[in-house]
Image 1: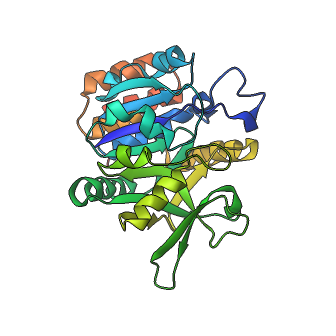
Image 2 (image 1 turned 180 degrees about the horizontal axis):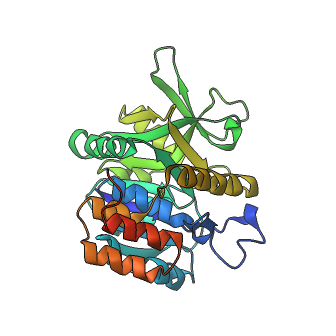
Length: 295
């Protein structure tokens, strides 16, 4: 399976803060927002990654992420010339995807929960071995802001709907999607919505109608943080700070995850730690290299 990070949004709801910088490059407490997306793909065991960026911003992302070798992965870049919706990521990344299954994660979403890596790897296996797709549902108080999934009394998925005026449930579909090998062909059939976008909900609905869509609910013990507003961005930083201060760990440190998986060696980890200087993040990586954290 390959991975795509859609990081092409300008984040207009965060103006003027995002006027000079793309939203995925904004800091959330102690690291750039896009680090959380990279970490999700690494946790899922995905080593080939495409980052989709807006025009003129390639050099900024490349300066931050490089070629991915510091994390034991391969990172390529593609430009989304016009923001045409989330499903457009499959068309922009069609050559990269080829005949593979793919995981798409939005560059402004944060996920946290004990045991999440096992859930992610199960979704990978579901796509690669069973040809099924997996999306994740999360309870929200304001479902009209999201793509929503509807269930029957037995938990069977009945429908998915994009930002409905009258939501049929409070379960939003998060910005993390696992698709089978047919995704490029399917995405080419998506028609623009009334607002002129290629909606990811339309793609999900197509898979649902073929009985190839599974919805995994993220319940107690899991957190999904959408950073689409000023308040939610601050709340995400507060959440990360609280967890890291309370538990003495780092959330979504790509170097740490790659080291845990054996994708990079101790010397590479220490090189990254040195690059981060005297920051708490750099010190954390040194602690990991010295075996002070147990898993």
